[in-house]
Image (cartoon, rainbow, N blue to C red):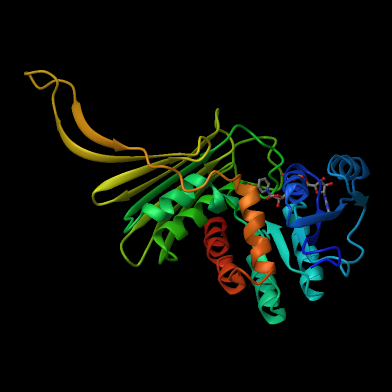
Length: 319
Ligand SMILES: NC(=O)c1ccc[n+]([C@@H]2O[C@H](COP(=O)([O-])OP(=O)(O)OC[C@H]3O[C@@H](n4cnc5c(N)ncnc54)[C@H](O)[C@@H]3O)[C@@H](O)[C@H]2O)c1
């Protein structure tokens, strides 16, 4: 921690969309000090640095003055930055995916373990209040379906499996509390502007040892943004809208027909709307969790070991 008190001295690498969000929550946190923004693009770097009252550097020259680093550069640039910080025993919060190559992620997780230096991946949906609420409610999910569809975004160079599907695969694994014994997948390449063979649609079907089944669907050729997860247990279905951050529980009571001649469908269902367990912005909650881990108040081993499962599934999906 810093000599100016108990604030964690942090830098953000990458001043794009996610980097500017990270810079904001760090600058707003009473537990952190934003000491610099690193980005090869001077305009992007100085814009974010000035907005949050810090300085810009074109490259991560050294990390000796830092307590922790946030890596939010494009995915292709993550591995050398994370490696450099961990090798100097600087804890890292790196955006998802850690890398588009499973071998890189495995190496970096092993490096974090060898150096006993915290490594956390930015699976920000873990901190969505609706997801936190569902995780507290569930007992034995048997069927999970997740949908993450968006209008076209050409910036996703890795394709949607590593970029979008990984959030929901991670969500499915954590809801079922296991890794799948079988993964099936389908990829679709459609858009003329998609570069590097990046897929526009990715579907994953996961089967677990318990018999539970989960499916996750990601697309960047939708016509509207959809972020939903449905979790079914034998006596209820919990539906989550991640955008609206709302949770609804459905219990079927009975069904029949609205008319005597049996046409149409009438259903009786009990609906419950639970109180959410948190109202904190997910990115700020994620930062708090990271600061806890760096301060020795959170479980660094548990966090590190939670990184690879979703990366392993996505590597199977794109294989
Ligand atoms: N958690 C989420 O929900 C979420 C959402 C979007 C993106 N992301 C992840 O965040 C990362 C960044 O995505 P983005 O959408 O913010 O990208 P972006 O293109 O908006 O920004 C990337 C920034 O990094 C800079 N940059 C390029 N090479 C660099 C290097 N070697 N070192 C430092 N900076 C460099 C660029 O100049 C740019 O300013 C990706 O890994 C992406 O997968 C996560």
